[in-house]
Length: 396
Ligand code: AMP
Image 1 (cartoon, rainbow, N blue to C red):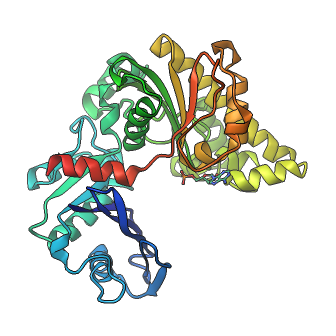
Image 2: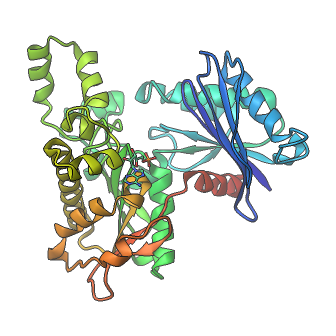
């Protein structure tokens, strides 16, 4: 069957049409500047990208344009919309209500809306995309796949913060974790690729992209992860600070005359390797070349990033009481061999040894540890769209 995978943001929408039998991507692209002016990027498999500028006042017009492109006589990937058999939607926050993916019904959408204040920027946009698809394809089954669901197996000792317990009771303030679809996909695939039994395994997944998080996965279930109530916690990221002393917020607010929204803006958008590199870039390609030209701030940013990853790996070895495999994934994890080398240099105490020749390759599943390394280290490219497609097929 063909599954349309939709990842809807407030002013953008990414899509892929996937044949679930062959797991082939038939077409993919994105809509940008929804509600501003509108731009559709469409690419049929094996063809060049087509870019169309056209008004998209709302997500409904954007999705209509995607559907029109998919069935276009000349460049369409399918003959008619009857060939879209299901739609899989990414939803950022499922709170404690969703520990797995769910078929979309009116009742479940009401439950998703109750999680909106946990992700006020993302969940409402996800819901707008779902409603637009329901209007345009009323008879096509749809499934919601949550970023938080995979992490719902964490025990209370991992998800509770050292805060007054009533905040958990009243407001559900706790660790939720994000990138769950990726952590789930990569942990399963790591076990498969390394020939391990997932039901008897200890895997640490390092999802290092512009947003970055780590998870500890025991016997296929998440037992801890580095992002928290929001994606701000944990690793140093592209522009997010990750863990800091919370008292810094008051200190900076006073010094810089900022209100809470101003401080949050700094922590989310002006920090991380971007802030550390004196706003040179949040992109590791830029940071690496600047470092090679002697830019000490870019060099520091990379060091801070790698050190934080290594500290979390150490923490999760403790949480798992050991580790069989460490997997690197996402933009930095898959491409930045330098970062993997730096992280693994801290992990010599685990008996980890890196095969530098393998580590220099890119773009495929690969083992980058030496045969005698005590812990296997692998690069496993993530594929969140395929994971959403598989979940959708399983439920419809
Ligand atoms: P993601 O959020 O997973 O799409 O990852 C995006 C990030 O991956 C970018 O901001 C870069 O920092 C990083 N990245 C992508 N390609 C490369 C590369 N060839 N070398 C180093 N870093 C890369």
